[in-house]
Structures are given as structure tokens and as C-alpha cells.
Image (cartoon, rainbow, N blue to C red):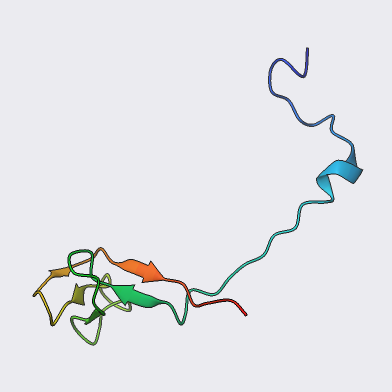
Length: 75
């Protein structure tokens, strides 16, 4: 009955203890323009502190809150 309802509280601790979480820092990731894939810069100096992050692309003129992130290569 517990299995049909999706209840996982009966799972042995040895199975749940194998899950490892790894957190990665978001710093160091390049912000890329969703239009032309060039690097973005912050639109103003208060972005991310007092106001939401707003990005500006020098190449195509994009201005907005959406950006793509390029993760650093893992070595």
C-alpha cells in the first residue's frame, strides 16, 4: 500500500545515505547574450544589489534580465 501511494519513508537508511550533493559556485561563470552569444556586462552599478540584474550587450544592443551562462571547464 505504501509503495502504490509513492511513500518512500519505508526505504532503508543505507539506500538514502548514498546520495551525495555537490554544490557549485555560480561565481566565475560568463554571462552570454541570448541573441548573439557575446559577453554581457551589467547595465548599472546597482544591479544585483538593490535592483534585479540587468545586462547589456555591446555587440547587438540587447538589454534585459535574461542571460545564458557558460560554466567554467572542470579540470
